[in-house]
Image (cartoon, rainbow, N blue to C red):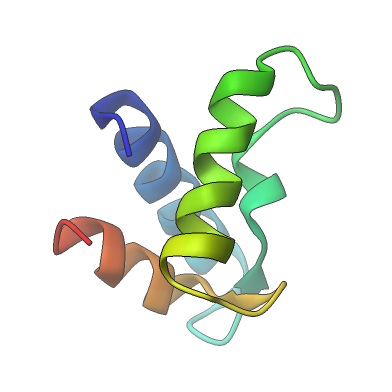
Length: 72
């Protein structure tokens, strides 16, 4: 996952956790606007989420933040 996507994902996880607590869940779609303006980046996030890590559609934001921060 490219560094710019990692930084954006961590920032979004932090924001969601701050707003709704440690139990908040999200999907990789949370990292994007409600339009597909960068399909390559969306595919990169989907590949990381689905193919690389075989995550469920919704996962806890704290889990995703920790995985990304650890460089996974």
